Image (cartoon, rainbow, N blue to C red; front, side, top):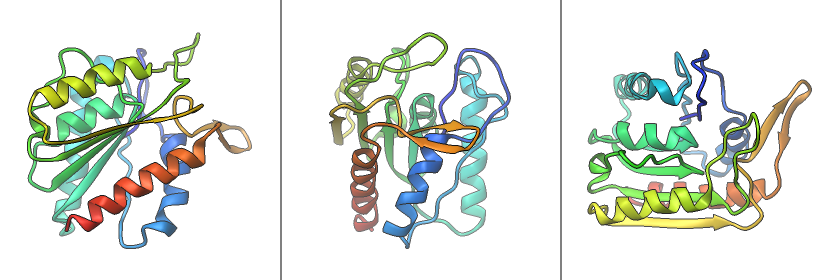
Length: 194
């Protein structure tokens, strides 16, 4: 699940998720990857983004997928948490996740919840970001709400995500390979959980 912004703009594909999938697919050949493209990618339309995620999950189930892990980048962290209520979702992985104060973690009950966050993540003018302290507070609220299997990891020197899009293609951000290794380990845990 992609990130978002304040302005209500049409959905786009995520450079961070695209970069990660290009590295993860060969390492996790038994997994399939699906990216949800929101109709409007704005945290002001969070309910609509969750509806888009639910539609993606229904499409997977229509193809016979019985279990999945949701990976949410930035605002996609909140989207993934809220979309996790179905039996098919077994794990949620938040990458620099936005976990607002009023977010219910009830959909995570009985599921694995892991957060990976860059230590240098900050919002800068014109570019949203999420501080590690903010995601850590959300993570602690999730643990306090009864999520049994929860893990938080910081990528030293990591920024907000793994890549940005330039006119010539994807540009890798510092510590991107560290992110990829941590995400791969989480996906391997998901696969091993059967």
